[in-house]
Length: 216
Length: 213
Image (cartoon, rainbow over all chains, first blue to last red; front, side, top):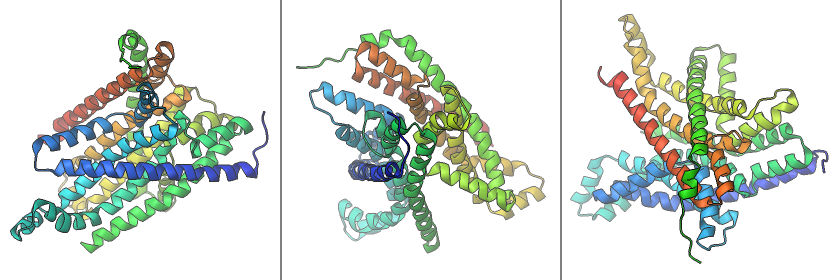
């Protein structure tokens, strides 16, 4: 049944943003955990570990996120696990975000000059202690602007979860379009809502980056 | 119940997959060319143009970069017909992907242009060097190349407006064979192979054009 696009529909769309944000948060937490492991593997002194981390990044960055979503959505059910779109999405986004965050954080760790490690070693700190007290605090400062930048990518990419039936902003837009048949207006509103989420973050990331350059 | 993976039916449908692969390649290549053209023209306008043009381009770049590709695609394919502009799925896909990649390319090329101090460019020009031109592209090339690979992977999204790319063909094979998991594993591997080929090509191109100087 087709009905008019009303104010209530816009409210529903705005309300659907909470699922976009919730999925982003889950993806960021899961991806952060995976990313941390990948970054550490990539800077580890052992060659096989570096190789393993590199392989992970290449495979994930070389396949579409959509494929991961489908593999988890269909794949987990054949091993007997009942999959809700939530679980499939959480798994796929953690894997995806982990590769990108891992690469970003690896870059930040490696941007710290080697002499800093050596200085730590000369004070008798172990490798883990050098990492914790000398390298990570400095790398963290470098990591914040690109991490916020990736958060924008993540918010935008949560829109793909709509294709496995995960109800978030884009899916809500599809559903609203189906009952009102006003695709142009609805998707324009959806785009505007994404913009309202992403643009401020983009600006924050840019400002942080500029401040970092001045501080150096 | 234990599940055994069976790829035979999936591989038997290789002709479908090949058709899809051809469209994925076509979409990627067309978009790379148009995206690069938009990127170069847009970046030149963004850096050297009059202020109204600079503002317009900046707005275009920000709007595209801060909204999801799939929403842009839906807006063009489902939304524009009500404004009188009707495309078939393939054309809509090409338009949306070009607009999207164009915005990212402008940003990359602009950053490259502005990374070089003006005095360097002037010094080069005063010596009559054309090398400055080349240097600019050296700065941007790796960033553009990785953006292009990301774009190739992102073309999978056009399956959602039923443009018949590799990913769409996968869903057809899936509905015929009911081998959901196997189909998407094969497709993921195909995209990975494509990504590797593109990365190697870009690396080769880079060596060929820039490294011997």
